[in-house]
Image 1 (cartoon, helix red, strand yellow):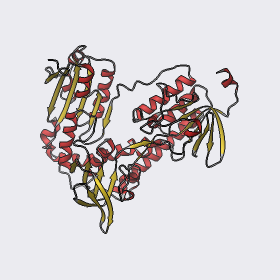
Image 2 (image 1 turned 90 degrees about the vertical axis):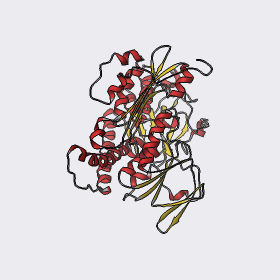
Image 3 (image 1 turned 30 degrees about the vertical axis):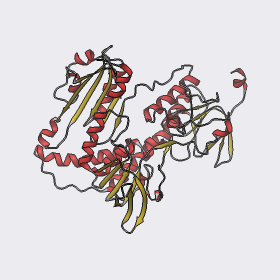
Image 4 (image 1 turned 180 degrees about the vertical axis):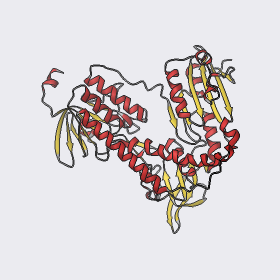
Amino acid sequence: MADDLAHSYDVDLFVIGGGSGGVRAARIAAGHGARVQLAEEYRVGGTCVIRGCVPKKLMVYAGRFADEFADAAGFGWDVPAPRFDWRVLKARRDAEVARLEGIYDTNLGKAGVTVVADRAVIEDAHTVRLVGQDKRVTARFILIAVGAEPVKEPLIPGAELAITSNEVFELETLPERILVVGGGYIAVEFAGVFAHLGARITLLHRGDKLLRGFDEEVRDALDAAYAHRMDLRLNRMVERLDKVENGIRATLDDGTTLEVDQVLTATGRRPKIAGLGLEAVGIEADARGAIPVDAYSRTKVPSIYAVGDVTDRAALTPIAIREGHAFADTVFGNKPWCVDHGLIPTAVFSTPEIGVVGHNEDVARRHFGAIDVYRSSFRPMKATLSGRDERLLMKVIVDCASDRVVGVHVVGHDAGEIIQAVGIAVTMGATKADFDRTIAVHPTAGEELVTMRSPVVTKHPVGVG
């Protein structure tokens, strides 16, 4: 390290990518006294702020007002027939995104980070080239935080007619008929948004249930709710798309066709490594197209690190932020630590909303052997007067040997907010006894989590019990 410190570099840290992970790393490193430069070729804020979590959540809120207006009558309100204006939502949403982008820029400047609006390419272990300026910058350390990008897979004839989650925010009008292809977070969330805003939605997924990897009862609950809201087609694939007079014709693998105004492909995302210059330093992507790193986010090249979606460890904004913070503390703050990817609270902003922390039932059984499963499914209080056909599902999974709560699953209103609070307890190692001795807040939906006394099923390892 002595020789490294003796070398004169232009900066101590060069960050490639101005998303959540890169911005956090840059600010924390600068706070530790490092000279930091950050290059972003699009807009500072990354996927989450510019064309992901934030604008999408604003659209989710917009869509949910449709139910609020309808439910109001059950509580004595006489609400005139509402009218939705896509242009107003788009303008206000875009203005909020621009405001947040400005805050990101300002905070980087206050931290002493130099921001360059350019594409950066790695030339060697300590050098990047700013493409637009054809300028080279040397750095003691390089951090790759370029994120991921949506893909259209499988590639079919006419795929160019579809849009991805990037272009969906650029729509100038709300399409009347939309085909959403996919069964993960993005497909489920946008299908729900557009359905609530009044579009006729067909959600098509090649699997037999939505949200692969989630608890089976959670998946069943969402499938049932979405089948009621839209045209849900499972075990189906699109074979081709064709431009027709009144829109786009999609031909499915069973020979049927449907005509829509827009097709949104949400079948996955891939780490954005093309043209990054990894080959110049001998870094090879893994089978998923991600940059391999160790627990401290270091690549095979000691001076080059990577955080966030480009590493494909857990493609979630809070994880990228934590990884960026851990990197900066470790490398520049003399406070080494790494992120635990084993227990991550998460939410799906579908309607009904989903919140999860820990293991699903099947995984818990494989990990812990004997488990107790507590479940409560009920009609929320609000629905008793609104008349809405709605159910709320709560599920708690307990390791029998330790009594520790190893999984909590919530489907229903404010599930994300509930799971954030519950995530604290689960992360701290709370037991079922801890849940039981917690006083219920009544009347709330969340009280069900601390009032379930008898397991609905006890699962033992295969061949046992």
